[in-house]
Length: 309
Ligand code: ATP
Image (cartoon, rainbow, N blue to C red; front, side, top):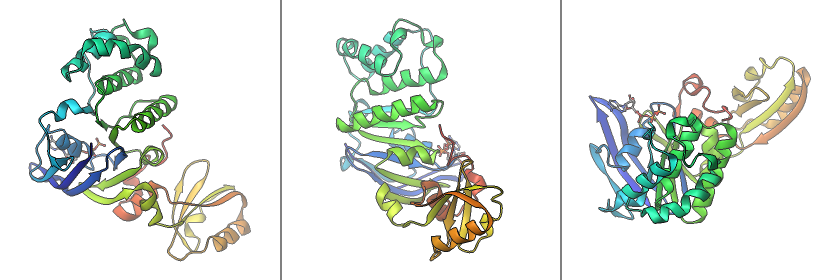
């Protein structure tokens, strides 16, 4: 299934949440909608799901208006999660799949393997209320994919998951992609998108900043960043000639280079003052690209680049 948004706009009480947004989610791709809190990600997803209607613009599925069977072909994980707490995991999985027209007999066959994959095997007959937040998240994910949707729409899928579960979830998404599922997910953690998506759209204040294949987006920026690990005080680095900005990733610094700046001369300037443990010219991160293109103050998106969750 492929999805297109054409010039979508949404306003709430005179405040624009999404402005003239167009994007294409190719069939079989993992597509990330990326942007800081309040950028308009959830509003966009809600419009795709027909929970809220756009003020203008069109949403097309396989090149046509949303088909009547759309909801059964889609698996949607909303940002606000909630499952009936008194039901057992088995009951809720069967119930949610049945709402999507999937037979309980088929669900029963698949519950065991999915609970095992999500490391919830021992909980089949336990109640939802007995789960931790991360475990409920994984359960909700199972209810989202059980009916074998062609398109998965996942709003802030990774929030609340620890690094091991984040890794687990990424691998599951890659497997689903291999079996032909199209995945659209939103995140404010740019690093997550970087590791997972084939295509992406960055939005800021309701507007598109850039979109395309991850490799193209990065390619457009060339190799204009340098990572350095130094010993001692690095406060002077930001004022070196050729350095346009510095992000402190704790273990290392990432320097955005000014146009035409030469990494060699920056290395020379560094070794004059401190001992350099590592120096590497790298592709710019999505975070760097976002900061440059959206022209936002880094403090607005602080913590969204390097939270290793
Ligand atoms: P987050 O990462 O915080 O979830 P987001 O990118 O998903 O953010 P949205 O939830 O789409 O952002 O919000 C975009 C803008 O629209 C915000 O300014 C928000 O206040 C506004 N907004 C969203 N939903 C409503 C609503 N139902 N009524 C009024 N304003 C809304």
